[in-house]
Length: 248
Image (cartoon, rainbow, N blue to C red; front, side, top):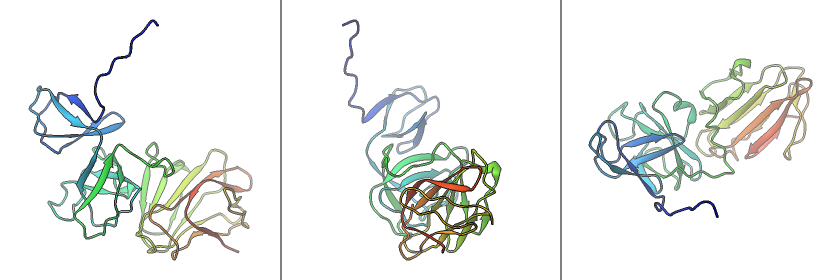
């Protein structure tokens, strides 16, 4: 054997020397993951960051669903704390600015009034995509998806939001996600008059200009649907979570 692999650490914490002093419990972005300082670390002094574990993170005034990804909105308003000081959110569209961080997954449901959410950092359910590589846009009203927004995930936060897709063209792809509380919002995807849902993943094709709906009664926070355009007849379903009903 021409090489030797040696044990270094158990992987729950890593050594870290900050350029500027950080406080205990502070979030640190480490490339594609996040670390949390165990204690105060002075500038230029070796310390440690946790990269595994469950942490209580101050949250915004919204419900949290177990298993869904969580972001830290750096200027978000915590339910109990200083406005603008930062807070956890499951609405990815609210956490797209510089300084915002994808944290991990929620491990227990939380009511809107709860002050903290319990997050397993750097861990995600592979069945629930984070869409971390694409922009996320919060929508609280009906909207037309723009060709220039291809690849985004629209986070729909209120009841009766309709996202209308642009005319089909090869290469276009859009995701629509229901980020309201369970059973709180009807979210619909509409098509141009000569475009349709081409079906896929257990959903039958629809007619031209007929909507596809994440029904309010069965809706769960985090239900989503991803469409990819075929450039001729409409959009094919690429990924899906939850119950979506085709308009007759």
